Image 1: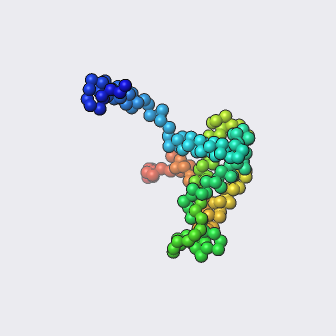
Image 2 (image 1 turned 180 degrees about the horizontal axis):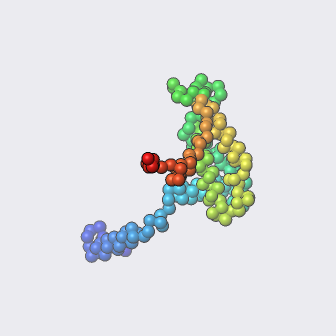
Image 3 (image 1 turned 135 degrees about the horizontal axis):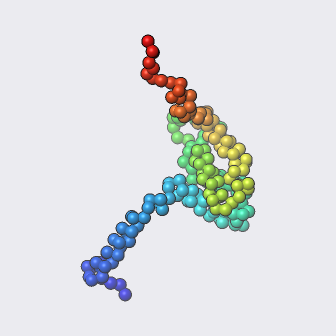
Length: 186
């Protein structure tokens, strides 16, 4: 039987205080208990990949998963992509900023796939997979990602250039080699 909490009856103050106590307790837990954005995304990606494997006909168990399943998964994700990739015959092929719309397909962006593979590679090992047989670390995955990167860059007319690593401020100039104010001794 339900109490008349919404009418302000006797049970309402006790149920409100219990809810407030539960909310206060939840807020007092350390922030470390909440997952970081990366960890949340990694968990979500891992669950999505697991669901993808279960939906295969016949279903694929994780221990039987190999790099071809990973490649198929990345191709499957293209249908949800938001990056326009111009095909060879398109009049906008190779133009960084096309003048109008076209019927070229939308795909997953290379950077998104690269980040996805990194998260899944880590999740595989965190979930008991051996690093030696990690399907996300297979060379075929790196080749596929390189092909996607190059084809998307070519389709947009923007060559991909790998970012150079910055030197750390402590490299090169040290306290012993650089003195902004030196006494001349004269």
